[in-house]
Image 1 (cartoon, rainbow, N blue to C red):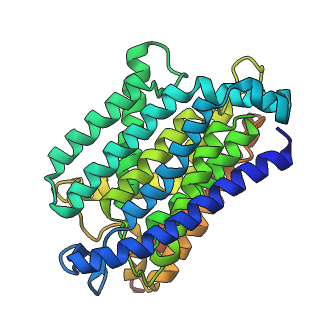
Image 2: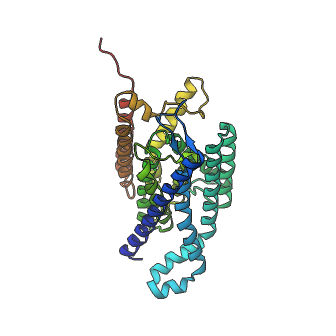
Image 3: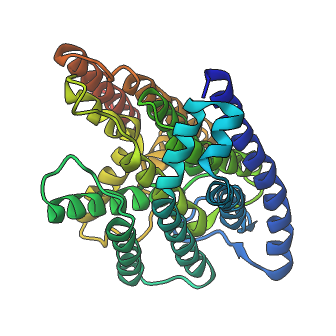
Length: 367
């Protein structure tokens, strides 16, 4: 496919999902208010007014409908028809999509299961250990049956274990980030942009297409979730965001071992997702240090700590957006980078996280 055709495909997929997500979000908001499916202030929650759930359902429907239709089209349309109309290069991409269809079905079914798990938790909160167990079971099936695995690690068991751990961390990291209006959705959208770019740089189409559809779904929801939020995504949305970010990062080919280039591009997902990973790690460590359950919610996320030190909620969210975008831009420098350039990207990423750590640290009184 030409650059124009690829841009039209990805842009059209994103726009279609965005329109669907906005319409579904408006509808789900009305339904949620009518049936009392709302999130009330109190406890570790930072919002000040009763806010309806339903955004996660809207995101899921806006993502699943186009992807399901696309999978059906790929299954029903032979490669020869694509070659006759669009040429051989398009046919090659189409054949790649057809060969990856079984894996795509498993990924989509995993998204259905993750979404339903989160929806159950929104309706009636599950215990943290039961929720983690069910999440691990679902992700384990996706990793084994997809298969969705990191090919870098030798040995089937090692590949399964490390991929499963990565997906568990990413799914929970985005769930943790859903603690302030617009935060989880906005960070997800920014990360999806850079994961799509990485896939395109690697000559892939199916991962950028998945990222584009989900990007549109998240942006359509974000129009009503940006502070002050009119609707929440709930766990049914935040778990889905983490799941698809994790899966997209695993499925993207960051480095071709046969190309003879250094493997430093393999660090791209860590750099792109550095901000949510930092939040997850810092919150877990704080809770463990204080002798509390690391899976129980509180207001110790760095977005809350930024607000405690004087930023408005909107400013805190925008600060985290900018930090996420900065690490994402840095990640695009890694393909083809040498050791010195890779070290520079790593240092820059650590400096961005250090700035966040300084901003959120308790102020010291002058003596």
